[in-house]
Length: 471
Ligand SMILES: Nc1nc2c(c(=O)[nH]1)N[C@H]1C(S)=C(S)[C@@H](COP(=O)(O)O)O[C@H]1N2
Ligand SMILES: [Mo]
Image 1 (spheres, rainbow, N blue to C red):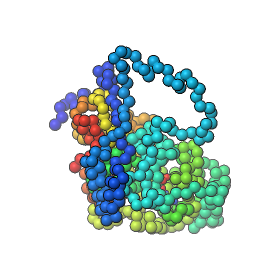
Image 2: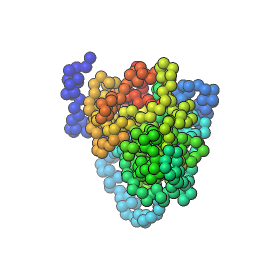
Image 3: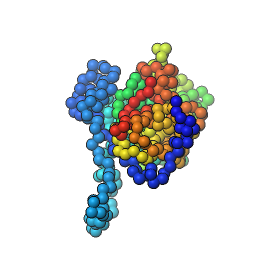
Image 4: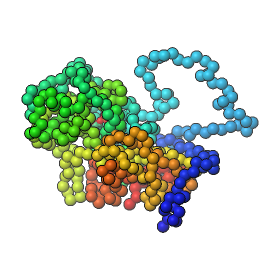
């Protein structure tokens, strides 16, 4: 039982006085990898033999071997005993010399000091890089927009850099005039720009049974958020004279070898939300993300956002394509399979402090994270630092947009004792993000897709942050 003062939140108010800010909380970065070469080949062997918990086991082995000890250094501010900070007193070359000229890089790159921030493969998760996934480094991102070069990737058959002058989009099926569009023809139509998240239905999949991976990059990094620019699909359907009464579904097909085809319900399209997009954060889509054309289906799992989009067919029934009948289905506790569970339910995660980081001092920390819902806007996010007994409401940073990532922050003074930090999001339908227990009650533990449970990070007395699940 918590003392009354803590339950009503009195002592939880953070006071940014001198005492609390004297030692600003410094965070040691999370390690980028959690397995060495030997570990990776061992995981591959185990994966081949069909073991379901191979990643978790590999993680445990790596942790025991000390492979998870962070190598990145936190920045100190040491002043020598004789006084005077050399970083101020000794003029560096960049103050006295001549800098580099304009257009040294025709297309700019991040600072060399940030080169560790990369999207990464989870060691041993897949056998090939072409049918695989790379995770976005959520722990290193600010605000809500994912830089294009760090957007997560999911390819079923590798990615291509397709010549836009040769790319075509066909519209057929229940339409008056079947049409073929060139990129130029699509790009001259009235377009819109909108911020939306895309989340793979398999984000957080490895955590269904138990803790599996150490960092937020690997637990939640299959989500990204961009400003997409494109033509509403309804415009193209109208140009082709689609039968919007009998035509209840549209099949979207990609031009890569994965034969990616997905059924999109017409109701999502007539609302004007579904876009045939060519732009991502102010520039053309990146090849990895479907250049020159992809479908944007706000709120719906990533697999329906067909890349290299080449054909749309209007029909009156769902197609039950391979990626709708064999994959992207949910095994329910009663043994049945749930099909066409498209919408990504409300979810959130704390990105700092998060797994693999180390808190170096007691004192003030800004707890920061991301929340999103496939049904609309985020209404509020509550944060707990005691494993879910007491919750405080976090600040939602603007903009708060429908079906987009929302950044939240909350002040915290760490007293140096073990703590479990969690975030719980609520969307504007009133839906509350579930605990693992609540989710497993309705979904069991044998699922792959659509894990939106509350994430827990344990902060040990040493300051080390670990991925944990509360039963
Ligand atoms: N043509 C095509 N579209 C595709 C895929 C693919 O392999 N080929 N993968 C799908 C899946 S499962 C996801 S999660 C998203 C990933 O989009 P991204 O690589 O831009 O992050 O694309 C979807 N669209
Ligand atoms: Mo996906």
